[in-house]
Image (cartoon, rainbow, N blue to C red; front, side, top):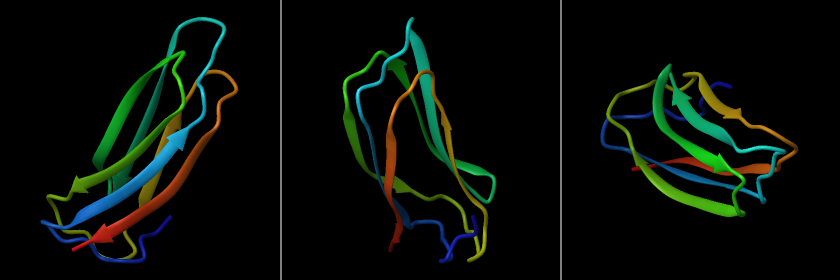
Amino acid sequence: QPSLAALRAGDSLHLVLWHADLAFERPATAHVAVTIAGERVWERDIAIPAEANIYDLRVPITFDAPAGSEVEFHLHNHGYNSWTLLELEVER
C-alpha cells in the first residue's frame, strides 16, 4: 500500500509485529520482510517450529522515499500460523 509519510535518510521505522507458536508437520523456515519503494529495510528468517515471539524494533533508514511510496509486508510461512503486524511508523 502507499506510505502516508515521506522517509528521509536518518529516519527510523518503528516496527512491531509478533507471531503465535509456529508449527508445521516437518521443520521449515518462515520469512518475513518489509520493503519501502522497493528497498528491503528489514527481514528475518525464523525456523519452524518456534515459540511465540514479539519483535519491537527500530530500523534505521538509509534512503529518501516520498509519501506515496509502496510499502510491502512480505510473509512466507508454512503451516497454519498466526502473525500480527501492529505498527510501522516513521520516527524522526
